[in-house]
Amino acid sequence: MSDEKLLQSRRNALKCMAYGGAGTLFVLAGGVLTPVNLATAGDYGKGGTKEGKPLFVQISDTHIGFSKEANPDVAGSLTQTIDLVNGMAEQPALIIHTGDITHLSKPAEFDLAQQLLSGLRTSELHTVPGEHDTTDPTVTEYFNRFGKASNNKGYYSFDHAGVHFIALINVLEFKAGGLGTLGPEQLAWVAADLQGRSSSTPIVVFAHMPLWTIYELWGWGTGDADQLMSQLRRFGSVTVLNGHIHQIVQKVEGNVTFHTARSTSYPQPAPGEGPGPGPLKVAPELLPKMLGITSVSVQPHPRVLTLADTALA
Amino acid sequence: MIARNITTPLALLALAAVGFVAVWPPTMAWAAAETQTFIKDFSFAPLTVKVGTTVTWVNKDDEPHSVVSDTGLFRSSGLDTNESFSYWFDKPGSYQIHCSIHPRMVATVVAE
Image (tube, rainbow over all chains, first blue to last red; front, side):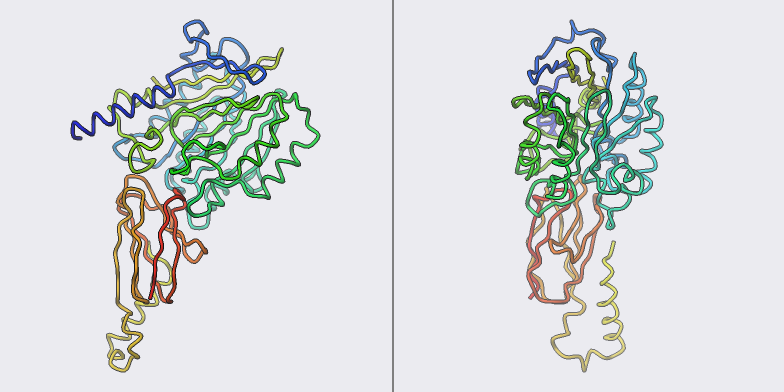
């Protein structure tokens, strides 16, 4: 790598880290997000929260099958991630994987990913596919393994600890040149799913691609997400999670907190840095600082969701 | 990886090899044309080819790409670095393509 490229990588790496910063804790109360200094927030290095019960851990963009310079050992990184989760003082009730489980939708990649994920002490795993999981010509490899929860539609909902979870798919109906798409059928299903639900129910929505436009030129957004957000606005606490961009970006809009997770495979450049959102090569010692998980805890009274990001190192 | 329809020009080639080429209508002389094009820096090159050309896309990025016809006429798998996909353009027309992994990547193949 040339000096100039190395410098560029470092600059990108630092920029990415500025977005995230390992282990910042965000307390979400009634939609108001308050950052808390980790030094005073208890045992965060182990991926757990001092206050509240660990509800779930979000793992994203494991890209099993990737083997390029940016991370020649993504299986090793996922194993490290699983060790991190298994080492939490209190185990989360659920694991959510926000897609790009594999790099190229190959059966052997899915098999290895499933084998590794089965090493999690928490066995309840919920997934949504990323666009890397649906590149096989028949788009069946993902659904053969994970399609049951959604009757092969890719979207479904469930409840846990008084929190309503909605899993959405926005990587299938790509229109050329466009962003991700939810589509009218899925949006109608969300409307039916939310109908009659109390506005005080905390909602967690998760999908692979951002459900808010982060960078349109790279397709980092979902074209019809507005129609989803208008349905969620009446709820007092909404947490919208995604992966896809391999770095932490977040924003709060009213009662809605948007948060993108790190990947466990390789970082990507900050929006607009370079020709496209490909793997970002960083110095080996920097890599584990740019990979990690998001953990979400819940407190019963008042019901508060707490988001925390933990890096592998 | 080769699209299924590639067998057709090969069959034509076989016919040509056994001497049919002499009596073949001139419009069919395109059968053997091939074009290779690179997918690089998250972009497809726009292409204009003669009808009957087999176009082979080779991915030169570190990131996988796919070659998908907007109308669903053809769809490659995710192509890793240096993997390729071919399609035989046997009818004249303007074919819009995109990458299903990076849908901002679009191009037009004109077969004339």
